[in-house]
Structures are given as C-alpha cells and as structure tokens.
Length: 377
Image 1 (cartoon, helix red, strand yellow):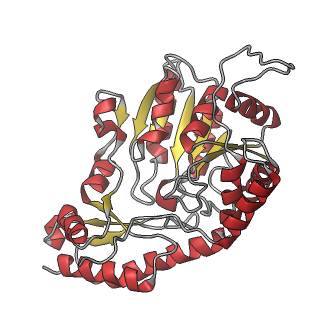
Image 2 (cartoon, rainbow, N blue to C red; image 1 turned 90 degrees about the horizontal axis):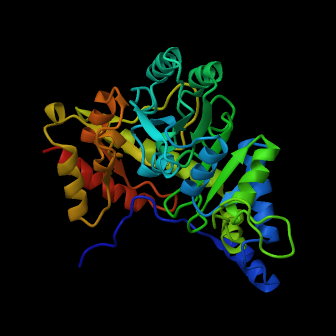
Image 3 (cartoon, rainbow, N blue to C red; image 1 turned 180 degrees about the vertical axis):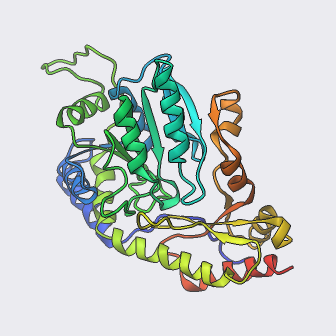
C-alpha cells in the first residue's frame, strides 16, 4: 500500500476560517456583498501597505481589470516576465494588446531590470514606448523593483505588479505589489493564503479602486433598475470566500515561517551535492519561499531534473518543473521576446518541491530521502 500523496502546496485551513464562514452563514451574508468582504479588503490593504484593495474572483481577473484601467487596448505593447504562469500574460491578450516577453536574471529568477529598461528605451526612442509592464514576483521572491519602476516612470509606462506568488515577501521594508499603479494578488488553493479561489487588486488611487469595483460588479450604473453604460465583468469575490480569507490572513506570518523552514531544511540536506543549486534569495528583500525551488545541472549532478521528479512521483510525491517560459508556449509562438537563455535554463533544470505550510517534518524528510537517493546515483 502506497503512502499518502504529498502535494506541492495544498491549502492549509484552521478553525478561524470556519468561525468567519459560520458568522457569514448565520447573518445570511452569502452573496458577493457583505461585512466580511469589506473587512477583508480593508485589512488586506493595511497588510500590504496600499491605500485601497478590491477583492475579485481570481488574480487573473484582478490583472485584467488593472490592464484595462491602465488604458491598455488593441495594438498596445505590454512588457511581461517570460518566466511565469500563463495568467500573467493571457489578460494582455484579452484586451487585444501584444505581450513582449523579457528574460530573467540570475539573482532572483525574476525580470532582468537592465534588459527591461533597454527594451523600454529602444521602443521610446522609436516613438512608441510600451503601454504597461507586468512585473512578476516569482516563487515568493520580489523582483528588483526600483530600476524597473524608474525606467517606467521616465517613459510613462504603467507599472503593474503581479505579486500572486509573493504575499508576505518584502522589497526593502515594503511589500512587493505596493510600488506600481496596481498590485495583483492571488488566493488560489495553492497560494500562501487561499479563499478557495480569488484575488485582490490593490492601488493607492482611490478613483481607480472605485472604477475597478464598478467594473467587477457588471458595471451597474446608479439607478433603481439595472442599467449599463459600459461592459463590465462578474468578477466580485463573495462574502463567504472573503470570510475564509480573513481567517487565513491572520495566520500569514506562521505560514511564511513554515515555508521558509522547509526551504532551509531542503537546502541543508542538499548543500553537499554537486550540481544542485537552490533558488537564490536576493539581497534586496525577504522571500517567503512560497515553493522551494532548485536547479539540477545534469552535467555535474549526473542526473536530470526529470529523473528526480519521476523518482518522487513513483513514491506518490508531487514535484513540478519550474514555469515553462511564455516565449516557449505554443499559444505565444512568434511573440517578440528579449533574451531567453536564463529562463530556458531554469525551466530545463529547475524543480519545485513540496512546500506546503501544513507539511510535517516527517513528510519533508520523506521527500528529502527520496531526492537524496535519486541525486546520489
């Protein structure tokens, strides 16, 4: 009989979430509006250091709204990290705009600031700077925001931060996602906190937050009847989902601490292995290590990332390659890309290991033992 399956990053729920949900049921605040939704937005804005927060159905929905409110439209170019999940890039195409993919740098695996700024300068000199830039903060690690923000401001490029994987991380003393015109967060089931699916748009601009909330509730005009002067979306988070989020948010610090402890234990276990390198933690902030990621150089380690992944899978343990770069995805074939060698190497050699906040030390030791056996062939 096989041991129970270990998942990469399963939800971690507790009694506080149940109490908030029961409160919503007992008060009959089930529909999208409700006091827990309001409280979740208020508390979340405070947590990340933004003035306003709008809770929506997914991080993808939040990014779609952010791009629309940034004025992105048909034919516009939007720079985007290539090493990311498809949800960072797909909303660009919803608006008829064109993604332009930028490679990673080695220090954090995030967008290369020098390369991004060179592309912006080149396009600005040609008379058509990008409309916006989607800066992804990958695997709990903030990108180097300052040089990218400065270049965006110089040329009027709207900076939108995709912090879906980085809640609880820092850039200096601040939260990634709080530096751009908009920040995007995700509460998918595998994220550090979850609402069972959901997302948040944050901004310091009160009018943009008001417009985001308006568009997310089907763009209903102020009238006693249902009247619509523009097309909106059914994107609002429910009061029930927000109730889960309230309980989750109260436990964020502990969740981050446990994920960082997992990363350290993996790093200590693998430190003597040739060809195995952990994802670096950049000097400019603190990573949550949402997922523990490492690379395996087969020329040195004598084994490939895929061999290790399959060895774990054979023991009922989920592990995954790092994100396949967007410029290698069939759906984005032929899209303008700058660089690519770094993200391609990370995809070819990178592996994500089980990192859930609720994972026990015994489960972690099980992962380590199988990985060590595979890596020590």
